[in-house]
Length: 322
Image (cartoon, rainbow, N blue to C red; front, side, top):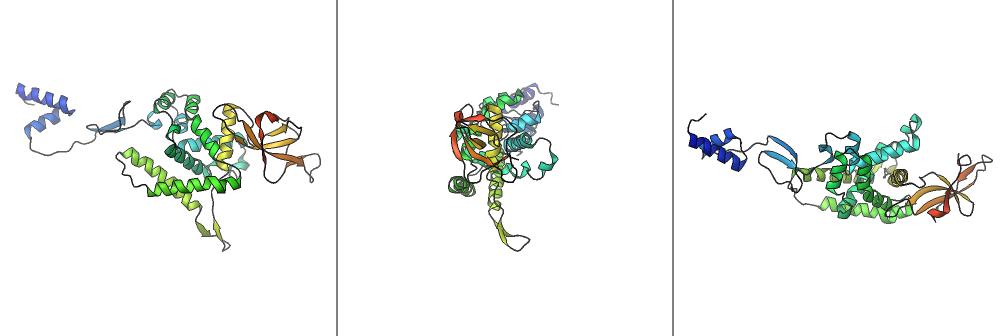
């Protein structure tokens, strides 16, 4: 170490001004013309107000739910958009419908449905900035390990996704699918250069979802030699969102048997959501006598009808569809 007090003072001043270590400042004073690069020695989320500018010697990024190391994994995943929350919504809806019944796990697997809901989340947050959760409120909820608070922050986005999605094939073909096609075109045409690595990570996630969407509509030859399109699980996001939102806010979940104000039985298959509170209306299909099982009811085929929530009363179990 140097014995020159002036050199020591100069090194300390240089270290304080640049953020370098004391040893690095001494080396710089010894070889002022020698080029060198500062290596990244650590990283962490930016403090509030930072815009991911490069900090000397640190990799800096905006806060993400995965940075809340003291919170449970489930809460962090519920707060992770788009894929993490989509996975938890589909998983919870699957468990609420089927519980631990192993016979349903393969037939109605949530893993094959989650990507479409994630794509819808990505599209809504890109096209409607007001639906992006408030970063400060979300961080407070996640670091408090409070799932209810996370759901409250995400609730406008969930409602918007439930309002967009549908279980009506005509509406899907006329409205929802064209919007997703247009969004996929926009993502593929977006040539903006990411200035931070986290922007690049977000873009990669978005690209993977769009790639999944494109693959769903590619034609392939099946084992029987016929051309076929895989398609997308278009009805699953609406069903899953309605199941989770009715558990959170009240109302009739899809599959619930109700009795209308005229006394006729019906079965709920979709909900219409307002800005807050339980659903304002339901899409129902009438229940008709089952000719193959006397004394039981079955769901009528064909399009359903939309009825006001006040007209739908919970029907006692025991006379439903089998």
